[in-house]
Length: 146
Image (cartoon, rainbow, N blue to C red; front, top):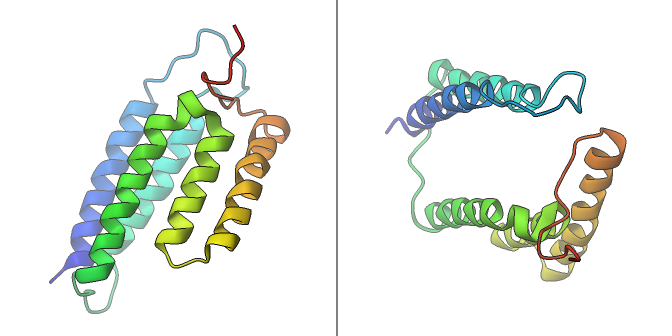
């Protein structure tokens, strides 16, 4: 089968859609010198380049994943959809810590290590992006005091 080519085509299509949607981002005020659309557009370019590489790369195609690997891929996508759903209510730190924990367990990490990884990665990335790079990230609507 040509699973790598299929993945490349799907990845390239997602990158094009992501770039098109990101180019429509409008902010009511400019809080970043380059605007809110630049990060997703840059990611779309990188993702598209990876998808294009999978389409044209030399070598034999990889076999289609089956059994346990396919189950892990499906669960990974479910975890990413869950991350998107809880991102705003729980905030970046908690959602990222939970995603890190879930993916770590999914890919055979020990629960102690993935717990430590999640507890360090959520706040660590928040500090990196929000404080050092001035990318505004949500703290979570559930934690807001009214």
